[in-house]
Image: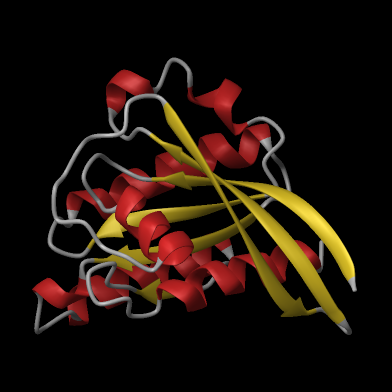
Amino acid sequence: MQTIQRKVCLLGDFAVGKTSLIRRFVYNRFESDYLATIGVHVSRKEVVVEAGEPVNVMLVLWDLAGGETFSQMEESYYRGSAGALLVADITRRDTFGILNTYATTFSKVNPGAALVMAVNKLDLVSDMEAEQALAEQWSARWRGPYFLTSALQGEQVEEAFTALAARLASQ
């Protein structure tokens, strides 16, 4: 089976759950204590996807700090990335808008990179109609799928990363 390695960035505002999504995906655990990521933290996980034939994709996950204070360095961290998981917090509508800024900057540095959106913290809401409409608009604009995720419960986390890995395997 062919093995490929791809660098992937997790992008989004502060406290949207980027680190929690990685912990759930890589270690299958959730930790309720919140420590803000400073700079970058790198994790790895292999995913087998079908791309005509099975392909083993080694995802090198760059968990980047969110927020404006990080913006001076972000482009240097983006270089060489094959894709990104852009993360919004379903309880904070403002985190959806900032994803366009992240996606624009990321796509300038890495034209043709695969983009997938995770609308995180699904476990904290009962009505998500408006937020799902925002996710659909983002999906249409950036031609990437979106997933309604919960790092706490593990809902759609594996699916979001696997969809990104599948897109990377077919690049």
